Length: 469
Image (cartoon, rainbow, N blue to C red; front, top):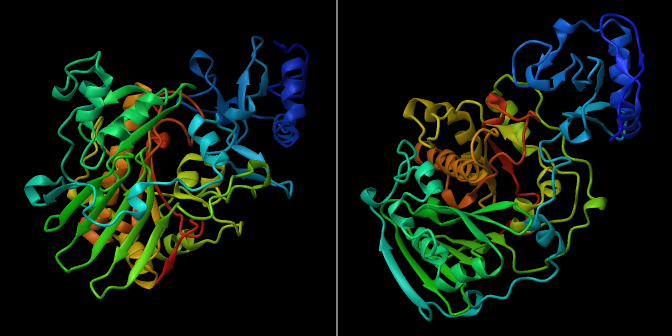
């Protein structure tokens, strides 16, 4: 590996000029220029901020950030050098300006992302064409006793689920049995087998969701995509078909219905709202005009929120309505799994909500802090019933990967649930996704508050289907 030796600069701090710094400076000339300017201006060690907290010099070789946002580290001679590209939180845009990096930028590509980018044909599923009632049907009348509110935690502790101590995971050697028991209504035995037969190993099994590890070591969460729709007073029927696909119809007290079709891999293929008057709104449709994604041709990520102060309602509305820089459309699977696609729309951070350690419950007083967000989303949906918002959950790097992924996904669901409970946001216009520790806002390991977050992204303009009929 390249090393540093000589230094350049004046003042209390100096920049290393050895091979490693030269290599990184060549790869990141804009960041190197800013760092040199700061050092030559007399960069004060007291002005450096350790990414994990504390004062400079950072403990255990942790990285620090300069006043202008450059992430640096020290070599063995206590000289400064640029941290690696994947650790930087700024980049130089096409205009030569320093801008905040999206959390999705320059991250490790996953097998799920590669698959979604390569997809060029729609998935064929029996549930798309079969008549109602032709599959194996299960029915459920939803009551308050059979649903969870956002103020309640999940019944299963994820630490127990991770260690296999839950009742649903008594036989650690029987992954298929664990997964079958863990998945909720509408999973289907063939769908379960499909996940395991595609070289996926169960990393965490709980009654509400499962985390599986793929061949490349990346993980993904499997859950009941209809959970938000199971509101008290509704009736749910799920048809499972021989190919592993399923169709779930949620009928509400007002006579409206939401129809969700999933494939054998449990992905949502289509979601349709059928209003009480018979009119339909296609919310999600991954079954037509599926095109592969050329990452190199995508525009730069959208400018991310840099102001840490809470947004007022007008600012929040403007942030969520900001247009994308691309004319093409993507499937929901591509948006969820390809970070470069997702970053075309900037997320809006939901800083009002904090969770207790290991918990996904939201206290009622905290839920009320979502009032502005709830009102903006409710107004948007009233204006355009095809609006889709994605609620996302993230963690820091403390704890097991599978635990963090499941916890972040649970928390995203709780935020979405609170929006429906307190502010009448229609649940069919929300999708949730946890990403665990995959996309860090502060690119450092450890107990970092800024990395434990929830956000919302308006993905209507990215989705290939958003038309009322």
